Length: 105
Image (cartoon, rainbow, N blue to C red; front, top):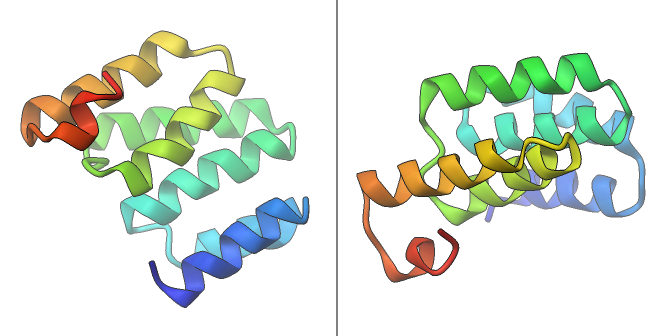
């Protein structure tokens, strides 16, 4: 994981969600940072924006590894969208079957 991603995780862990969001917005074209942006928005209690960001990311179907699926799933679960979280893992497994993803579906 990159140092930049570590900075985002540190901001989230220290509950500095605004800083995490700013860091994510600089790199939101990658699936990991787009997923972390969803989580940051959810933690900031900006539900409408978090829902929209999750919808956009799910529509792209770019999350295919645990690093990006885990924060997306956390955001979706916190938003009460458990079915979408399960579907994201299932779609990732269907695209690239692996033991790592299979254990989560």
